[in-house]
Length: 364
Image 1 (cartoon, rainbow, N blue to C red):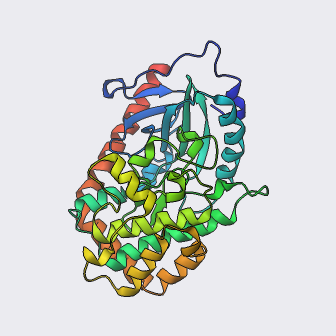
Image 2: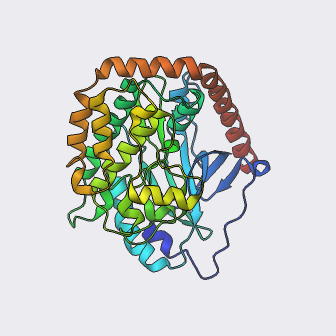
């Protein structure tokens, strides 16, 4: 593998089509990576696998904790190559460089992105823990305690605050982490200590999205928990689109329901385009009025009626919670719901270590 610029020379004429990879094919090699498992349930326009770099030793073979074992793992996303590759590559090369420059502990770092077998591949750090979608599902979608929900939204704002400040010198909108690629609850991971990471930073053009920073960005919008109305309507998207996404995620976390669910896909899109949503207190009566006002302001249809920045929204949320207490509550919730899953995940990773050794021995 390599950068998009390098891979561009390996695409097109005579390049093989992307092959099907089923459960019976795993573990198998894909480019420079050894794939162990396809992750099911990810609301993404691409296939998602967990694996490790091909031919490298597994440094965590003797480690005892899930977090130590997972340090050698990567997430590989595979999506089809856009029909018109030229604008895709000219845009993606700059975007690739931007996301590689992000250095924040709550981002899963982009390792590399490019093309293999006429498919887009994106490799990022592995995120240990459970997704927000799994957390809501395990809590029977009754919603999370309001302070925990506000804490998660606060931490997402901290990530956005950093990313927005890292926009490149040309002021391109690469720093729009959520609103261009959409934010799914499957993309946000919580570890057993209540730490929060974003595993898919919305690499829009690398996930089969539009080659332009405006407009409707493709099929993922029907599956994501948040997407700004201006993106649906084909308007220019700026950092305030990310504010809307955080507000919508907070709404879902406190209510346990998706904010723009309709009887049909068209009705859901129409509700999203018009930002038609009821107040969260209609479903969660114990939510503080100040938090409800904050969420609804973030979800305003007009960008100029939302919070001015991620810093502004983070400050409002921070004033409503005790961060240390909320993080402890989240950690306790994770332990009560997923302690058995952690043990199973650790055993599964041990099997992957053995499989990697067997594959390496067969290769040799």
